[in-house]
Image (tube, rainbow, N blue to C red; front, side):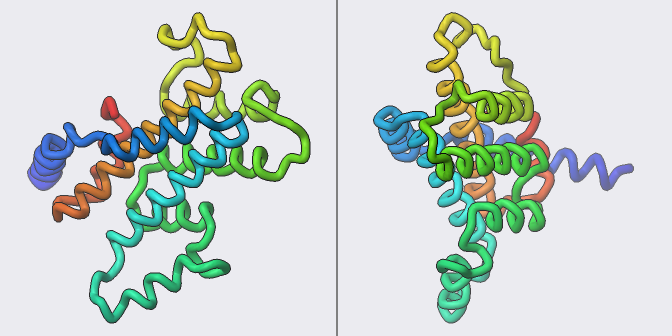
Length: 200
């Protein structure tokens, strides 16, 4: 019992250190600027690409850092290599306990949305029923409500896009927190679970 209490106290101390870490302004500006210019299709594809890049950075931080191993590490992310796809990065991050179950579910939902938007020959947007259904799943995983006071008065077309972007920024912030914890040598797998209950 004492071991469990000590572990919980250790995690609280670590969370106190990283609680003020948010998405770097440069990354937030890049996301906002890119997404504002895009159609709904572009918004989803750009968002998925930024999450994909963030997961790759997270994985690289958790891999060996010896110069002699760079070639092996880089090779894992090349085209047709084991970690070349968004799905593979999500799976290996989850299997390595770098991301929580909620993050895993959210990332996979965004991956499915990205695939729908990227491969559809039709003009589709957030109003499309199947995309709307996936967005509802994404929002429910995060714990937000589609009737959020901030967005309730907006037309559905704008509200849905804003709620999607909010979920993406939420995920990017969590990944950044975990990356920072690894960089500072204070990472523990319980952090990912604790972040699910934080206000990030």
